[in-house]
Image 1: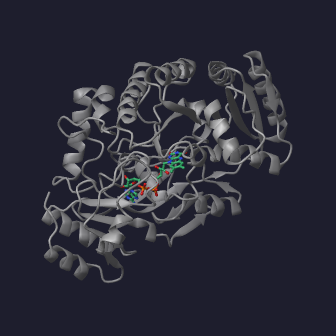
Image 2: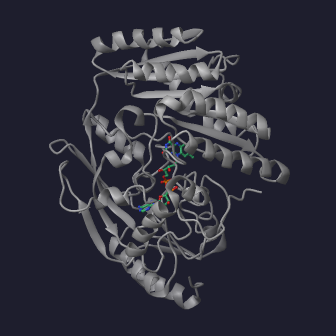
Image 3: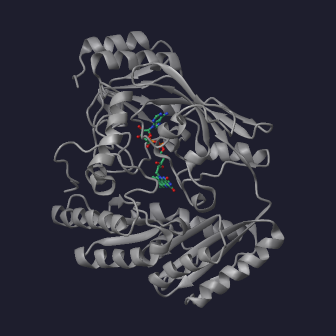
Length: 469
Ligand SMILES: Cc1cc2nc3c(=O)[nH]c(=O)nc-3n(C[C@H](O)[C@H](O)[C@H](O)COP(=O)(O)OP(=O)(O)OC[C@H]3O[C@@H](n4cnc5c(N)ncnc54)[C@H](O)[C@@H]3O)c2cc1C
């Protein structure tokens, strides 16, 4: 990798004719962090809506061996957009002009900087649904969602971003513009490059346009809140409901620490003395829903739920889901640093994972908050800490490593939806094995022979360890 010179900046400025090149330190600082850990200053930030200008910049970067870091809104929780080796950041949030819904083809055509919540709204206006709904959907871009293969509460029933991306336009790391897939749901022409790009965390190219599959919107939905005196019982209720053949659209868990944090942040009448609550959303035909709500409530009671609450109108339902949305902002008021993990286990192992998390919390004496998309095993163990306290951060490092080990030992994965980025790279071999990891590395080398596209992500550097202290 080369350091950038003033001649490089001049060449960049000559390429970017319609956009902006930011080089002041104060501007660059705004692009030095994401929702995870660490700050890294880029040498230049590019804002342009022109795909041709971006492609020319990538060609220049490939020739000069300058790192390129694609960036959406920087809400990533694993370090994905961090410019860890300097170079250029491409601010793709400015590419937000295209959002077209085709009712005939049941697709949306979007540019990468469009906010995911705007796609939800545009689809719903036409009676359609774009299911992936990360809790950050009002602030994150569809480009970032595709690069991270983001999930969200609806992942349980509807799957994740990759299940809805059927076509892409991409600038390759060598600066060429290619198309993958298209507008048809069926497409088996050669290797599925669309699926390879989705979830590649910006390491295989810059997504400049996408075709997303849409569904008809379900006619009705109901919400159920079940209150438990034991986190492990709550875990058992999740397994029980799913094995009874009920597939909720959402099934979210909040432990006591997150319930208390939300109530302190904004009182919503949550049961602060409960060990956990489960929030369910069931959707479908109204007649079938009546039955499913009763069945789910009975199953929760059978494994020890002490209370079941069923909101009766739209406002009451919104209030319940607001509680879940507020967990992230609420818990950072406890201490300033939030280490947000998303290790995921098979559904049947949720009660064991809940028990392992409690052991890890006690063993390392860390402030562990557990919430998340429990129905698909994608718990979000968050450790709330203070990065200026070195001794505490060492305990946090050990706890995080043990959370990853527990997930992999239970047959799960390091990341259900937040991606590997910088933080989980040292643990990749533990999950994939040396050869599995090497096969991935070889794909990266073929796509990006000079390693200019988002270098320093996914693949561990020799001897790299998790370092938070
Ligand atoms: C409060 C909060 C709640 C969250 N909830 C969820 C959740 O429920 N589910 C979930 O999955 N995630 C969640 N996240 C994580 C985060 O919002 C997602 O990873 C999101 O997809 C990131 O989008 P972004 O626009 O912020 O992208 P960024 O953070 O800017 O970038 C993310 C990655 O995408 C790459 N990238 C961005 N745009 C492009 C492009 N056009 N082409 C190629 N690569 C690109 C970047 O290089 C980086 O690797 C949450 C985050 C926060 C802060």
